[in-house]
Length: 164
Image (cartoon, rainbow, N blue to C red; front, side, top):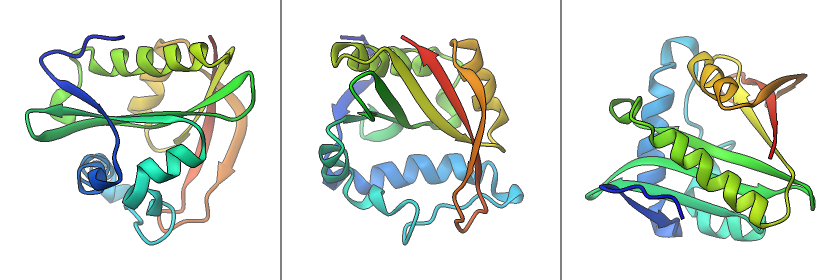
C-alpha cells in the first residue's frame, strides 16, 4: 500500500458526496473562464453516491484528507479483464507539486494490476492541459480518439492510455 502520510486515505462512502463535490468543483473553477462547470444534475450526478456507483462498476474510489479537509480524489474501474479506467483524479491546487498525484496514480495502477489489468485508459477534458502534461510525464500516451460529452461545459475529451 502506498504511504500518504501525513494525509489520510479513505475508501469513498456515499456520505462523502460533499467532499467530492468540493474538490472537483474547486478544480473546475480554475477553468470557469473557459466554460467548465460542475453539473450535478447530469454528468456529475454520480458524485452524490460514488460508493454505490463504483461498486456497480466493480472498481474502487478513494478520498485523500488533510485532517478534515478533502484534498484529492481518485478512482479506478475495470472495463474488461485486461483494461481498467482511471476515474476522477482531482486535487486542490495548493497540494499540487508535492508528489501526491504520483502516489495516487501508483495506488490505482497497483489496484489495476492486482485485478489483472495490463493497460490503463483515462479521459481528460481537452482544456486541462496541465493534467495532460502530468499524465504524459507518467507514461500515458494521448490517443487520436476524442469524445464529446454533450454536457453543460461542452466537453471534448482526449483519451490517454498506459501499458501497466
